Length: 71
Image 1 (cartoon, rainbow, N blue to C red):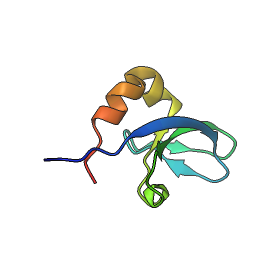
Image 2 (cartoon, helix red, strand yellow; image 1 turned 60 degrees about the horizontal axis):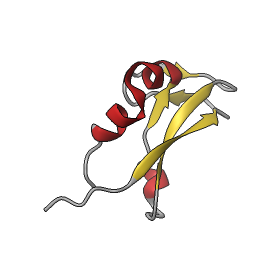
Image 3 (cartoon, one colour; image 1 turned 90 degrees about the horizontal axis):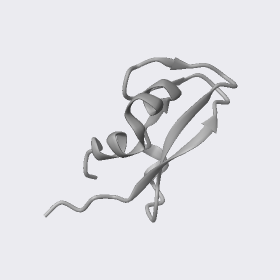
Image 4 (cartoon, rainbow, N blue to C red; image 1 turned 135 degrees about the horizontal axis):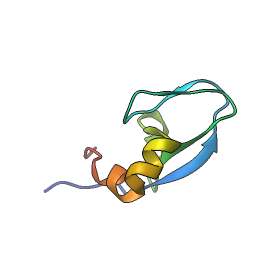
């Protein structure tokens, strides 16, 4: 049985260049993006995925979260 990790997307301002996990677009410094945040898993920040605003607006949080792999 697969055990899914509970996650959500949190809007953040980039402090350095970040790459969107979904489309590969570069998110420049001081631009907004969405980072996956794990609930109850302290090492999640090492494997968290980032999404640009365009992917978030196009797909929504539920679609991006549902496409995650189990860890």
